[in-house]
Length: 55
Ligand code: SF4
Image 1 (cartoon, rainbow, N blue to C red):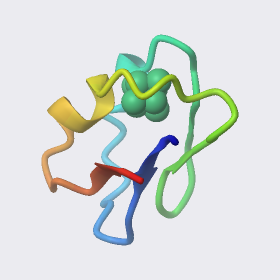
Image 2: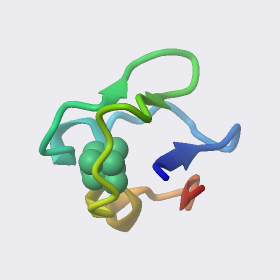
Image 3: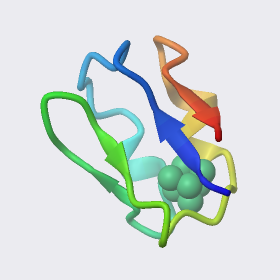
């Protein structure tokens, strides 16, 4: 299990610094590496578009 970012991501970057394990990568939309994600939920709490959910 991991958190995932859907295509409603506006690449604002707010989640990037919230991830304690640096699992989030920049791009046209941001991506979470499922091998690094610990499902802490920190990124989901700060996403202004509600684009992050638990898979
Ligand atoms: Fe990082 Fe936690 Fe979001 Fe997973 S749920 S990408 S560990 S901030």
